[in-house]
Image 1: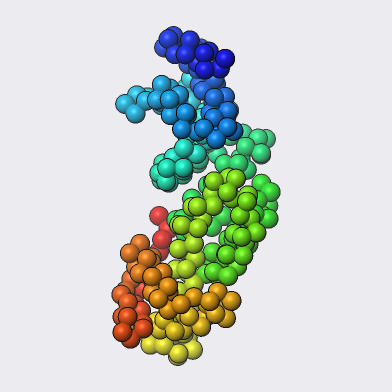
Image 2: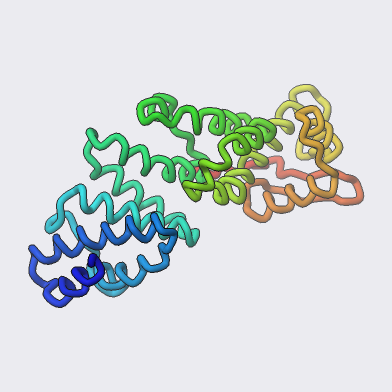
Length: 262
């Protein structure tokens, strides 16, 4: 019925009133498609109301609640295909236009926005997490992120695995955010080693990283640590190179761990 109504509305979509109803129906279809796990069907609707070469629905024509819903689902689609910059921009727009009394909707937006911000090295304020009842889900994760505590990160993610899978944030956390936790772990170990005189400036011994991980009950082979380090260097989270023969990571003395915030 909704799809039939949508098809009828498309014919007369040039009228302002029709455009408003059309977007409302489109949002209802998005909800159904996501609920049924058939979100690829959203693109059929999206191509009509928001064509690549056309004009996106704007605040002049549509009510804030409808726009917030539209931007939220469009952001979810971007998030699914790893278009993270576009997803973040859309989630931010949806959060900004969403009225304060719609706390549940704002909470749902933050579920994704927090993950996207972590990917840029930005952590949410604790009061924000408490305000939107996300402290239980994200506070330990944020703590592990800031400390570079890979053991706490893995433990927290394992505890909330089903929830993150349901929200479709699990893969982004494992593939992208975890790399930054490792980056922060390497940085912490390097700083402590420099302070204690255990290592020289610009040098991080792989056996030291191996021992640190073992102490955290995260037994990791030297070869795996080298792979993690190579990945961090490739992603420009760490400046340096790996000496396999000497079992060390040679770090830039000027800027070994560049800022990842942008």
